[in-house]
Length: 219
Image: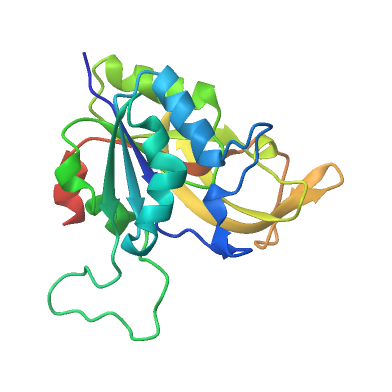
């Protein structure tokens, strides 16, 4: 049986109303966005969850999220630190925001020994997305993968969003262009690129499938 790990990037949690954004309740019974992702992952055959967080909110995160799943699935934590950078480099004194996805993933290298899926802690993906990538690796695939979404199904009624517009050929990802200020404008979707889209375009929501071979590449 293939062991699958869900790697949840939550170190960049923003503070809002004095609490962590990803911990805000959005469901009818107080569920958070992370709750939905973890539940869908478990139902889709994932065996382990690794949360990438900051050490300064570990206690709050464990109490609100991690502890409730400890009897259902293996739960581990990796800590992202902005000062954890290659020798010869120095973190700018004014920088407070964590580094990007690459550094976040590398923080978990000692906790992962099989295929894994990376997601954002504050995005909702839906059960089918987890099933698709779970089936991919359970069928023996070893290549990296990305779950793509239709643009018109990822927009918000509360304002513009940023998405990665994908160029795909023969089921291979060729390019991703980060595009900001995407929102509905009548029958079309506008953006900051002076381009309009019809909504059928494939976009990235930062749901990636990798194997441990990525760690060497990142290093």
